Each structure stands twice: as C-alpha cells, then as structure tokens.
Image 1: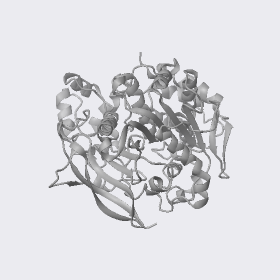
Image 2: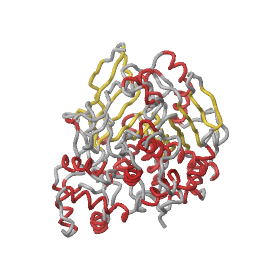
Image 3: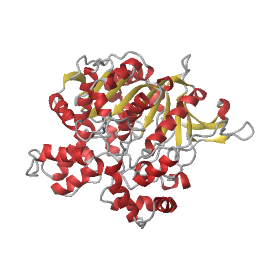
Image 4: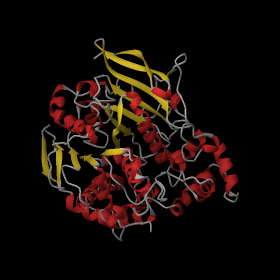
Length: 538
C-alpha cells in the first residue's frame, strides 16, 4: 500500500493551534498523527534526577498566526547500546514528549477510546518513534479504533538512579525520590487524561498497556493509582500487560546505595564530598558520559525503587491478601496478560553473564534485591551451586530464570491471587499464550530464537514496525484476536474463551486458536508464593 502525507491543522482547544500529519491511502484520510508534543517541562540542569514538572497553567503549543508543527517524533532518552538504537539525532535528556495517532474514521459520540502504550526495554533502553504510517493497518483495516498515545520517558540512570543523597535532597524540597521514569509516565498519563478530548479521545475510557518493561510499568501505574492517588482522580479503566508481570519486591534505598556509590565513583566524583557537592557535580556531567560508564558497572541495571511514594508499601501483601483484586473489582478494572512460548531465548541476550554460577548470581543481583537473588539461586541451583538439569549452559539458565521471573511464573501467580481475591477468570482476567510467529518477524528476529519475546508485537499492533506486515492467511487466523483486543479497549464484554483461572487462550503453531489447561500452573503458583515472600517492606 502506498501512503501520502499532508499537513493536518488542529485547533486543540485551550492548548493551542498545532499541525500534525494526515496519512492518506487512495486519496482517503486513514490516520492523523502528531509527534513530539511535550507533556512536562525539560528534566535538565538542576532538575536532572528529580520528579517531572507539569507544564504551567495556560501553556499553549501555538497560535492561529503561528501554529507549531508536530510532524516528527519525540526526543528519546539517552541510553546504552542495544539491538534497536534510536536515531542519534533524536537522543536528548529533554525527552518528556509523546506521539499521538488518531484513526480517521468517524468517531463515536463520546470520542474514541484511548490506548496509552508504554514502550519496553528493561527500563534501560527503548524508543516510541516509528513512522507515522506504522499504525495505519491497525487503525484503518481492523476492528481496533482508538486514539493511541505513546510517551517517551527517562530511562536507565536518568530515570531510576537513587541514593541517600538524592533522597535527602528530595525530602528537603518536599519531593519524591527515585522512580523518575515512572513519575514521567504518570505525568504523561495525566496530560492525556486532561487533554485527549482535543484529539478526539474519550478521557473516561483509557486503557494503559505496555510491552515487556512497558507491561511492568503498566502494572506499576495501576498499583500507584489504586493505592497512592485519590480514587476521585482515577484515570485507568483497564490494563494490558504484554509479556511481563508484576515482578518481585524492588530494592530498597539501602539496597541501591552501593550502585549510587559505584556510579559516581566511575564518574570521578569523590565519595567523601558532602551530599550537595556530589549532586552538583553529578548534574554537570554531560549526559553522554552518564551513559558511557553504565556499561562498565558491576551493578548495571537501574530499576524501580521500593520507596512507598510511587511504589506502594507492602504491595505484594496487598496482592496476596486480596486487597489488590478488590480494588480492581470495585473500579471495574480488567486485565489482559500473557506471553510468548519461548521468552527466554531473547531474555538471555540482554547483558548476558559469563559461564559461571558467580556471574549469573551477579547479573541477577543487578535486577533483584539480595534476598530475591539468593532465593532464586538457591531454588534452582541448590546449596552445591550446580547448573540444574535441563540447562546446557549458565547463560541458558540465566535466560530461563530471567524469563520465569519477568514473565512465565510470576504472571501466573499474580493471576491466581487476583482470582482468589474476587476477580473472574475469562471476564476480569484474560490470559493468552502465543506459540506461532508471523512471517514478517524474520525481518528483525532470527528464526532460531523461536516464538520468543517481542515476536508477538506485530500480532497486537497488526504488523506495525515491519515492512512485510501480516499476510492474508495470518489476518484470517488472527481476526478474532484483533476483535477481542478491540472489544477490550472499547470497554465491551469480551468472549475470550477460558472460564477457569488455569485455562489460557492459545494461538497454536498450526495457526488455529484454542483454550487449554496451563501445564505450568501448579509450579508457577508455588514459585509465586516463594518469591512474593522474599524481601518485603514492612
């Protein structure tokens, strides 16, 4: 299909006059696009490593005589090397911006449902920018109709550095500490709630979704809203978590202090300086240097902090005692969550350890608290620290462990706790498993990795990001999946299939769809109980 671009002027109410793009096909408009809209003030200079600041009251993007064009994409948080690096011209600390896609079909009376989608990348890397044409098939050819909002947010150290020095500064300013990237996402979500009506969206019908670390972020956004924000200001109506789960209890401030000390030491900042001097020097370091030293670090992953401000205190207890499920039920919040068959083959490629017990232990300790790491290694390797049966190498074990914690085992334990807490399987909790690849996936992900992490993104987003897109046979196979996603995002009842919590909707290797009993269920529930009791906040 050949597409054309035209300038699309929009009077966006009190936020001003802006210009985006209309994408046309066969001379008919199919999608409107706006790229790089700021949702918060730049987190630079003295605001580095601090929570985001809202745009001031009365902020406008342009005037009738001088409309501002938003036809490109967001700036992207500076980040370490990865398999999908952003355009160097787009990299910046000033990345608190978002992209919007709007289907050009006639809108429902209350506006389109909103699909707020958070990108993945281990919270270290990632990028929301994709050609404006990327979502045309999804938004023009299928049952899925929505306003799609994709925010950029701070990553790695810029988004998740924490230490006692930053905590003391935040306390003195009445501010929060750590989790800047999660606060960025929340700021983008609040901007969306307040302004999406100017783009044809229904602010009362917002789905928060994400893939991988974006799915984990989605869980964090819901948890924060339910336990740390007034119910009167609730935004989220439902969540979709693609290939990730709730994770383990994060590290505490005490746990992350060695990482903070290592980070500033590698930047040449003496540990014996007073706190203000350390932070002043840290904020003067060029952002490229902040990224450069991260690849050298022993504790390489900058992750979510359990601080009781964004991350609720005793969150896993709230899941296990039914309080989490009860809040979801009261608010009418539903969950779509599942996995690919072989998540581990991709997970083992991210900062892979060397071939030893000690290396795997060290690598896991970058992500998980000391107690969780010890529990994992003891559970799988035993007291003799041996490579467990069924794994040919320590790297393979790392991939399987990582995937089990991030996806396979903990998501099932989460589902079990939600249903025990009062949610209904197949109605409130929709589970899935993908066991087949699309042909276009070969463009980016080698066949030998199997049906692994990331291979289902073009299923949900209908070929977005892949030149080949879906072939005719795949569209037939997946029509019901697309319709189910559309119903879910609309807020309609979904005839998903499973009726028991240990049943899962499956896209089989032969292309057909069925419902099966989950053969990982019992082991997963036991694993959840083990891990969710490790490293609590009291």
